[in-house]
Image 1 (cartoon, rainbow, N blue to C red):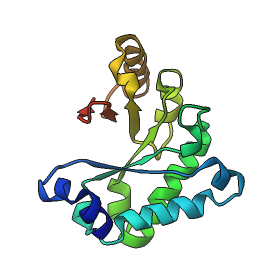
Image 2 (image 1 turned 90 degrees about the horizontal axis):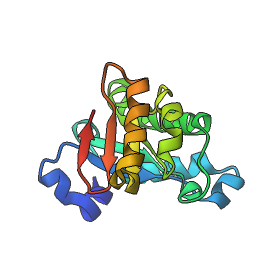
Image 3 (image 1 turned 45 degrees about the vertical axis):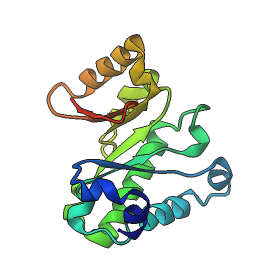
Length: 166
């Protein structure tokens, strides 16, 4: 927990239930074909000293840095990386911890792409960001969530830093 404890230790000490950690690669790393190595190093660097109980309080948000404010990853690419992140956690912590891990996809164009991402088996929710502040846009996202999750739950992190479970 050294990285998180030094940089973000107070959420663990305060017994917060959900702590979001973002991981992702740059365009140069993606173009160079090293995106998985970069994300694996990023994940291990952030969770290396965490216990299984602490991991259960984490939410990992996959946010490819090359897509921020530009072009979205495809749902298939995001699913592939989410499955890879889950495999990285499974390698270190086992299936029980990996299967319980929540992985979000973050993108600014959520209103348009939400349903396709939520349909992926390893994407458990959305990191919505500033789109949660616009009522019309947020309603489109909620409609997409409802179309995918008629029964069940999805995790969404809102701009104001609160978590809303639908």
